[in-house]
Image 1 (cartoon, protein in one colour):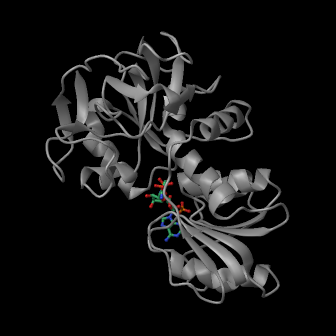
Image 2 (cartoon, protein in one colour; image 1 turned 120 degrees about the horizontal axis):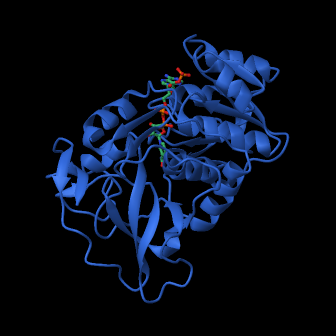
Length: 315
Ligand SMILES: NC(=O)c1ccc[n+]([C@@H]2O[C@H](COP(=O)([O-])OP(=O)(O)OC[C@H]3O[C@@H](n4cnc5c(N)ncnc54)[C@H](OP(=O)(O)O)[C@@H]3O)[C@@H](O)[C@H]2O)c1
């Protein structure tokens, strides 16, 4: 089958001809992949710093939308023809940038109704991350004030939306081209991070006290974000750069984990229009290397997606 990935850890991304899956194990299903998300986290897999269960030659890709084409003997929740999405780690056969992928049946959920394959494929990782940061790491509560640093990013934008749905007052950092989108996502105030004194500006917006909690979605951004927190506040970073604790502030270093129940609830919010996600770029599987470069650049105005099923013209 056609796939895109690497022949060795750290190798360049290229089209691969990989063996078809043998078939699903008892608890697995095989998906015909329609679309697969691309994030800069795929580069962490490529370079071997995030082990997702595979050894090269391997397809990359840790989020998928597709149709069930084979069902394991013990699977009761899915049937052939079901349309599903997921962040199905650990992967057993290959990654999601492939025509077919074998996944644990307990890690995929129905594709949100009325949502394109591309949007569905780009949703699981950033949505799960956003939910886990807010509900588990920070336990944000209604009427608290939350800083979202990097709200112009896909993940940061979902953090803003989910926090606003909880009745949290969001102060966001974003550049001029994302400010309107971040406001529409639910931020009460948007501060331009290009102004080096932005943490002071955030503190001013809280009467000089500082925010109750902060999410950092900017690589290397935690050291600035912590300056905007109040004494005894809570900080969570998703970019692996936890700062040293100071002023009684708790610091959480958050990494996404698969959670089908959470993903199903998030998909319900997406299909109900309470969450939105606009895809930034759609490329064919053959352009996976370019897709990954674009995801790393972050300059797409939304997530990057690989359209895997050939000959499809959209949803
Ligand atoms: N730990 C985990 O499990 C996990 C999960 C998901 C994502 N992540 C990480 O979270 C980060 C965001 O990922 P993503 O895919 O959501 O990003 P993305 O959509 O590619 O983000 C790009 C956006 O980030 C904003 N940005 C860039 N530099 C900035 C800065 N110095 N200050 C504030 N905003 C800045 C820009 O927005 P403007 O338009 O506002 O300039 C840019 O459009 C990545 O580092 C990713 O690896 C981690």
